[in-house]
Image 1 (cartoon, rainbow, N blue to C red):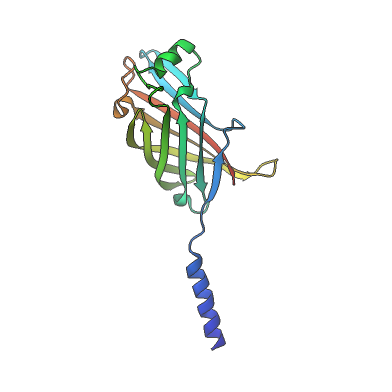
Image 2 (cartoon, rainbow, N blue to C red):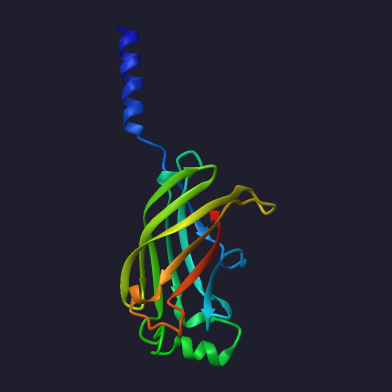
Length: 189
């Protein structure tokens, strides 16, 4: 009888504990260990590269259960920086981003698919220029572990292509898209 009660107790504890939850990480923008970069074709001759200087967010990550991961990021569109002030002013204007009206872009994942070998596809909703559309980010785990300051970190890189028309943004000459390159390092909370 005691063995049966013990077995039932262990079974109940196992069932009630449920699956382990992914750890929460804050994206390390303060230490400049993350970046949201873009690349846009310029007149069909070259590319303009830049970044957004202000953004924040967090992600959930469990290296043993990648599909339990999630990410939420908010980008300050007024912080667009292509390394040329007049061009930045024009891109932020109502002609393109209309950053004074749409000062934030947000991404919230809806599903993370583990593709194996640290590769994953992050599906989610991107709100940009007042439009919300589903996108997918091809991502890769760079690494995770203890840092020299007593924290635990995880880092990823990813990329995606955004069609400007999908978000109601005028094309920039022959440029109909922008390629996004993302580097995200977070500190476990």
